Length: 172
Image (cartoon, rainbow, N blue to C red):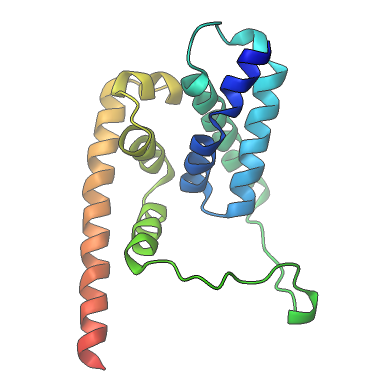
């Protein structure tokens, strides 16, 4: 039992990366990871001993994400309240993100959630199309199509961002 828990805990960095790609908000991503881990630990008997828990955990997380997305659509958008400086609970980080990584994350968030999920599972996390299909509950051909279209859309968005940045530099 302890070996199984250790194997699940070892997957937390990958789960966090996938959650951040899905929801973009750090706090919402951490909540998604926590929900995933709670469900996994409560249903430990569903995991076959000897298997890597990664695919099982990603499947749980994807289903939780889909459920949350549907719930949000039914209830409407969530609005965040802005706090005054005196009410702020955290301080903005001093280090700056690189422009390129910020553009990639922004472009990834601009594509649809179905394509984004398939692209991250296959392109970033390294699952096969068959594994991604099983996790997402769709045919492998659909995964291949979503990944191909997602990559194409991502390339287009990144090209547009690069052109806009170059135009801004010239205008100044």
